[in-house]
Image (cartoon, rainbow, N blue to C red; front, side):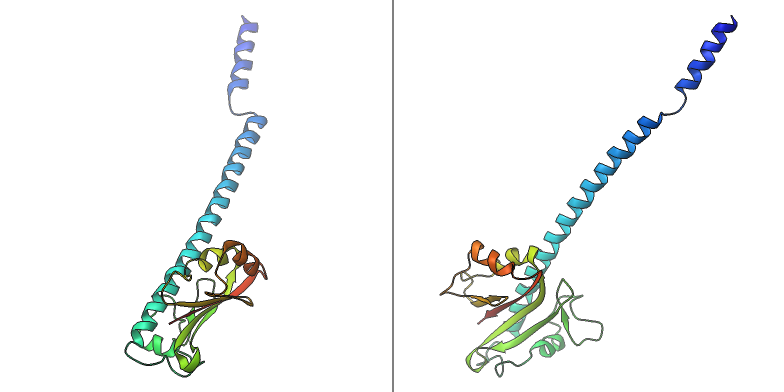
Amino acid sequence: MEQTVLLVKNRQRKESGFSLLELLLVVGVGALLLLAGIGTYQLVTSGSTSNEAIRLIATVKQQTQRAFQGQQTYGAAGANLVPTLIAMQAFPSGVVNPAGTAAIDPWGGTMTITAAGAGGANFAIALPTVPTSACIQIGTAFTENDTDFVSLVVGGTTFNVGNPISTANLTTACSSAANVTMTWTFF
């Protein structure tokens, strides 16, 4: 009888709690799931920032055209249009810095919007710190199929009707640095 009681007590000891191997297995699976979640989150937020930049460029383009509708030019070539657009509240919320003096792109760079072309007939929107990972996606968003499109300069490469945007050419231009300056010119 005493032997039976000892066996029952031993069995109870073995059955209470998890073994070290079981705990390590659970921690390992949890770590793998966490790493997969972090990777997915980074992909989602990267795409989200690119889409935010595309929406920002589209909004700024439309607001700039609206601000100067009916006028011959956008001002003297090189004229800074940002103060005019800030005064008109043409930027989406959160784009203008707290001092109210500059427009900030989704990557924290200071956007420039200037009159461009002969006599200021066009305007240019420049994003100075576009990551390579977003460059191709937003570079193909506004192309020669857009009736207002004049050109896109990525790094030092100019794309226009004479040098159309292709994914291969854009990949080369976007790979010139970790962050590139992208400048769109529109009518």
